[in-house]
Image (tube, rainbow, N blue to C red; front, side):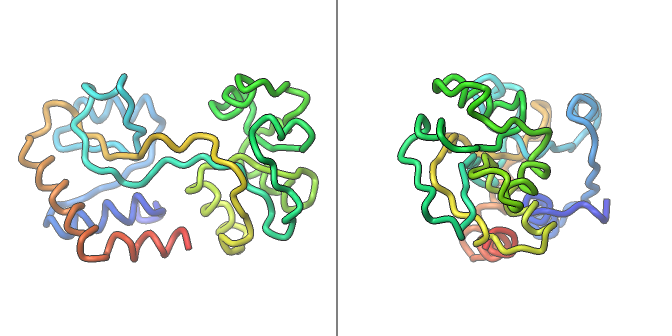
Length: 207
């Protein structure tokens, strides 16, 4: 739809235009998207974390971008410099309740009462900006998006620790997709990286 925005949307539009392919973007719940992709030819899901469990479920085009979940502080608070995850115990760190990030922090030995468990990223960021917490756990894409909603630059936040940076986001196409289409999309994405258009688009959203 015309109102869908974001780096991955912009990249997909650019790829479709370069490849001369028609494109219709729909936003829908994950389960419905999976069902739709399985029944509609030439469909594509994004943005997917490429994991060993999912490897055979899709044909892959990418990577779109690294998947970087980071722990941030407000840039104006340079005194907050935890050296490792266990050092978060004495700080108010905002993380979404029941999220994978929250479970990871608990697995690292932190207790629930040592975390600020929030409803969502937007709520946690408002609390951080208001000085009601010290640190926040965010996907870097989410950090850029939510700061944009507040009309604030990305430099408002400074990352202090990585939490999960081992994977990347990809476009996923159903297994029965014509391999020629998958190859064409990958070639176009590789071209956009080589000629600088990928990086120019990335800077629009993350710098």
